[in-house]
Length: 221
Image 1: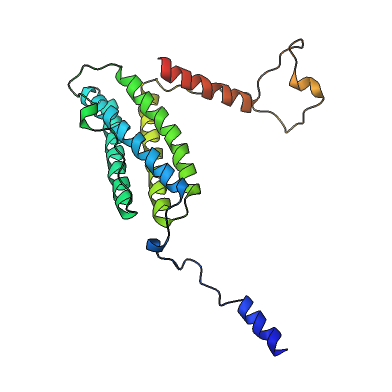
Image 2: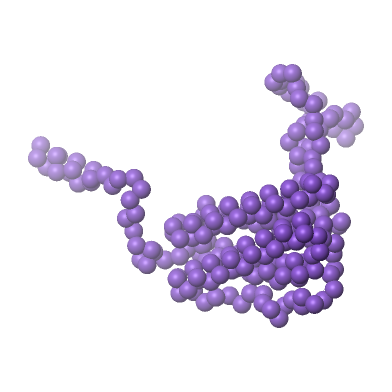
């Protein structure tokens, strides 16, 4: 009986209060996923700084300029934060884009509206990347870094949306009629065929189509 009680005690150690940090980051090696996200994000953000420096310098509209300058400040801050983390984990800082890769005095290549739409589009996709980076990270310093990047990406997108919406340049998905009640698919005819009749797109299909069209619009406009 005594042996059974001793085994039970050993198998159920004293519980640790929730929220108490029980590890030392210096004893935890960075994972391959964390290094991968940090490295690729550093290259992407240093490239964004190069782009945005030229875009912000050539921007004349105060509304557009405020968005581009804010995005530039955010990307510059991210580069510095990632360099700090590279130093913390004693990893060489990658060779990213720098002053030699952008000529601020060169003439503008795109309209200001396109520059803001481009910034909005890249922020949307980098937001997805930072969400994956956050969920795949185990060290708390990596999670805190990518969590902050998620929040600032949302702010860039929100500011770009507000300006584009006010100027009538924000591509919006169409609206669809609201159904009176929930319903089920009745029969395989709903899936259609190359010989059958067409049916209206549902909300999921329409949303996917608009996402693709918005990407094409932003790239080709």
